Length: 375
Image (cartoon, rainbow, N blue to C red; front, side, top):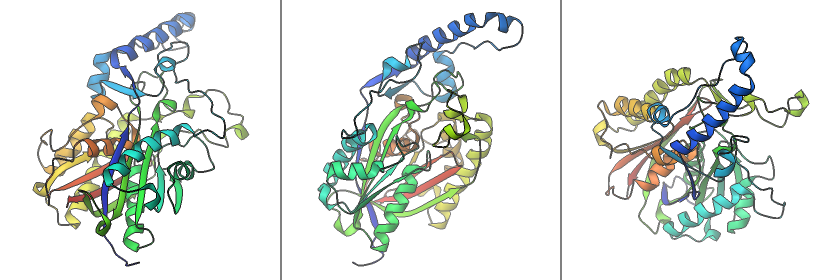
């Protein structure tokens, strides 16, 4: 097989859960929970031994994040003030797991767009911020359900998982070890969000995205050539989830706060924004791409203010909404899938020779960027 083939993105797919929680609905449930907890602990609050849980509001959520709604796999469990997390039915081992089921739906659409049969795929990379089991790999189950060949493996680089997965697949195509791959990102973020924490209860939603990557000379449909990829990491505790298989060995089976998503938002803003802006600018400069050459920025969909800051730094001006499309108002933060949703929904209008950049960033810290050009 020839080496140094260029890789191309030839198909994309998005599985979107049908259930939607609006900010107004979320606030009603959260405030009911807060009222109950404040009443239950009224004496401790009055004695100054415990802080009262403040009320949330749709206006607070919108101004803090730009989010207006989110899609979830289970709405009822999240909105139950006595529960405040999704209720997903257990499945027997011989039934598809939740992540694999989502993945098959997204991958099927991506394969159809690419005009590729599942049997022609050489590798499946399931890249997500959490995986519902340790082994066997979710990716291998997806491989089995789709009927793809070759091999499959899971990857976790939190919110950067998709772009890191793209780089891994593109590198294998360039090296000649595979011809085609699927990078799929099933994100069930509702299950690792603490819906009872006012500072973050609105952040996440559920979704699954998938991309088909092929050696460019095999592409049968309209496609984007992957011009260059770049990934970077820098350790930080400011976004963390301490759940894991060693939990019971530490006698930590209680519903502890640090076993869900935890972040120090102010430090994340202060440290991640310059890191990502510099990463993108350096990547573009090294590839000879000037700000005016960039037709589209598909950024990680975590927070509108973060994207506005990064877009302005990268382009040297306030981006036009069409240049930097946001989807988080409809999907909320979907971890690694966010930038891929934006790419899928806002890329068809680009013409031959137009260049864009996909970027995701988050816990780690991690940041991945992918420069693409419309063929």
